[in-house]
Length: 184
Image (tube, rainbow, N blue to C red):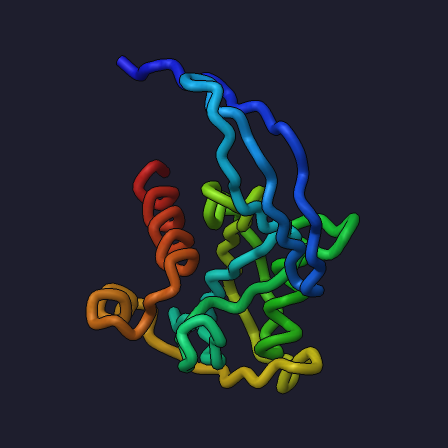
C-alpha cells in the first residue's frame, strides 16, 4: 500500500536566469513534515519530443551529435523542442525531417516521460515514425552538427547493452515502444 505524501509549499521564488534553452531559479520550500525551509533548484524547459524512426526495410534512423554535458558525441533518436502552440506529433515529424531529411509515412504515439521531475516540469513525448523515406539531406538549425546513421532495428538491444546508446530519454522511448508492442 502506497503511503501519502503531502505537497510542499513554496515560500518564495528566487531570481530567474534565462539561458535560452532553459530558465533556472532557486526557490525556497517548506517541508510539510517539519516546517523547515529548503532551497530547491527549478529548471524550466519547453516540452521535448523523441522519434523512433524506422525505414520500410527495418532500419532505425539515428543521429550522432556532440553533447556538452558529457563532452562527447552520443548516438540518439532524432528529436527536439516542441515550439509554443505546436502539437507534439507535429513537432516530432518536423524535428525528424529537419535533423535527418526523413519523412514519416505514419506517426504513432508511444508514451511520454518527465525528463527529471526532481527539478524539471517539462514532458518528453515519444513517437514511433513508420515507413520513413529520405526526402533530402536535412535542414539543421544553427548550432547543430548532426550525423545521420542507419542501424538495423534488430541491433537495438546490442546498441544499448554495449553502451553505444546511453541517453536515458532515448532508452526510455525504446522501452515504451517495446511495452506498447507487447500490449497489442
